[in-house]
Length: 158
Image (cartoon, rainbow, N blue to C red; front, top):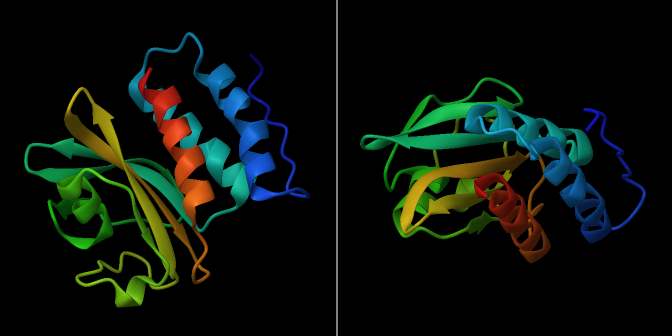
């Protein structure tokens, strides 16, 4: 598949995801390198939605280590249970944070980040990483994002 995305921001959030999902499947089809696939997923999501930051952290030993991302520089390592990413890892569940300043123990990797969604990457019964998305706007993420980003992760982990 060509590496060009068809970007349409003049529609609903759900419709944007619906358009993007098959394109992500096409980008990843036939590619077995997990890092390359994470890189293309972050680029596709950033291109479509223009979020402040989108990227992956991968579990390595007892911490999350920064993986492929799009956006400003980020925290390199996060302990289990710390911040939104570490909490998502520990709890093995998606966390939607409407205002990061109100999240106990939030790690401020970038002061411009105002809201966040973090989704665990679960392979078998083990969390192997997280997908972290930050917005410079309050209350930016909702269940629509959760539903579709979980589908993105499912495509990535196939």
